[in-house]
Structures are given as structure tokens and as C-alpha cells.
Amino acid sequence: MWQISFILFLIPFCIFVRIMSCDPRTLWSGVSFFWMMTCLAVFLFFILSEYSEWLAAHDAIIGILVFLFILAVVSVIAFPAVLIVTFFIEGIKIIRHEGMKPSNLLSMLFSILLSVYLVVWPVIGSLEKGKFSTMLYVIISFSAIYVLSLMAMYSLSAILNLIHLKKKRNADYIIVLGSGIIGTKVTPLLAVRINRGIELLRCNQNAVLIMSGGQGPGEDISESEAMAAYAVDQGVDDKRIITEQKSVSTEENLMFSKELIDKENAKIVIVTTAYHVFRALILAKQQGIKCVGFGAKTKWYFTLNALIREFVGYLQLTWKRHAIVIGIIVCIATATIR
Image (cartoon, rainbow, N blue to C red; front, side, top):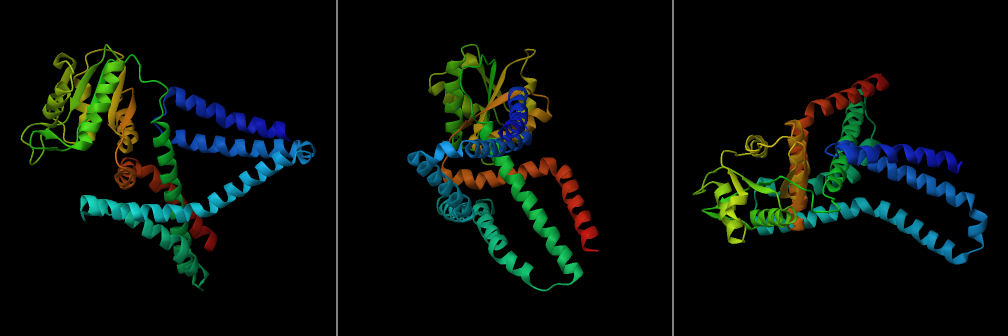
């Protein structure tokens, strides 16, 4: 039986390797990784079953395996509670540090909604309902499961796209995406992005930095000018810097930066904050830009909140396909309950 499970593991393994080697800028990178790890767990289970007699003679190994099994079960059971508490605490932190703005309430709102879904929603499901109420309950339940699964796969894909074995990639262009500036000075968030770009520039001797960002409200100069000035202050030769000064969104960052690239089949690296990398890569893919993304670190409480915002942005880009899936769920629920 373990031979069959090994073959079933090899299938997603090959698919995962293929996706990651060709173009990992897709949700299928996370889906294939999850599928691969699930099949690996099944394969290991059958391997342990095959050698159960040998294992029975080695108490130390049995003890380790039992401990790992208990740890895995506890982790799975405790994960929702840990997730809720983490998002709630980090939600309080971002409000305390960044202020009570609607965009800063996402972590706390997610924590509350997840609590309601896991605790209150099953209680509602146990109540006696008519056909319409039952159908509505089923539709909302499956839609919520779908969106939560989608969010999990998005987060996993985002992490996979941040993993790089080496910084030296013979890059021709390193595009640093802008964010807000104060007057003529870069913010700490933007400074970290630029520092990451400079770090990669020093590992890729033939590369050029493209500082991308136009002038927004309350900014005395364009973001790219402030970014270039900061990079020069850090010791970067200004001849290795190109400024893109028209963009006011991530999509425009990529579109206008692409126009500045005059080399065919150029090797391009995109640098932005870690939580923003995956959506930027998806937008680049839609524009036909072949590239990889490197992330700059930021504070954890800010990352969690921003990750939800990025996921919402992803849904805006791909809402049609997901609306079709939810529509199929509605049709199945309606047909079943009738």
C-alpha cells in the first residue's frame, strides 16, 4: 500500500516543482504545496504501518512518534483559537500605533468574524429552520469555507514567492515600488524597501535600480525623487538609478517602469514590502512582465493587517472566477435542499 501512496505523493510533488520552476506567481503554487504535504503525510503513515513490528521493538522511537502525533493533534485543535487571539491582539497593536482608521481595523474585524463563524454559527445551524433558511445557512457556510480556504492558499502562495536561495540573480533591473513620503523624505516603511533594493543591487553588479512612484497629495516631490536621493545618501551611484515619476498605484508602478526597460528578455526583480510582493507579482504577470519578487520586512502587527488588505485586493483582481465558484455552490445547495 505504501507504494501506491508514494506514487500519489510523486504526482503533486512533480506538479509543485513544475509550477515553482516555471512561474510560481499563481495560487496553484500554494494549492500544489498543500496537496503535496498532505500526500506526504499519508505516505509516511503507510510507511510507519509497514514497519510497525520493528517500531514496536524500539520504545524510544515509539515515544517520539506518539509525542509528535499528540503535538500535531493539539496544534490542529488549537490553531483556530491561536489565530483568533493573534489577530485580535495584533489588531489592538496597530490601532494603538497607527490610529483608528478603517484600514487599521481589518485584523480585529477578521478575528471577530472568525469567532462568530466558529462559535455562534454552529449554534444557529442547530436551530430548526425552514427550507429557505436552511438553504441560506448552507450557502453562507460553504461560501465562508471557500473564502477562508482561498485566504489560506493565498497566504501560503505569498510565502512561497518570498523564498529565494540566492540574492545574485544576474538581474538587469531592480524595481523598487514606492509608498508615501513626508514632504521630501522617505518614510521608515519606504526606507526599508529601498535598503532591500540596494542590498540586491550590490549582489547584482550589472543591475540598475528603478525607483517607481509619482507625487501624491501632501508630497513636495515625487516619491521616486525622494527614493533616489535616499539611495544616493546610502552610497549608490546615481548613474545606476532611474526614476519613474508618473505612477500613483501598484499597477501603474509596474506599467510605467516597464516602459523604461529597453532591454529584451531583461531579468527583472521587484522589491516591495513582504506582504505586498505576491499581489505585485500577480499584477506584473497580468502585464506580461517576467520577474521575481523580494520582500522587505516590516512590523508583525502591520503585516497581518496588510495581508488581509492584500487578499481583498487579490479578490478584486480575480472576483469573476471566484464568483463562478460561489455561484456553483449556490446552485448545488438549491438543488440539494429542494
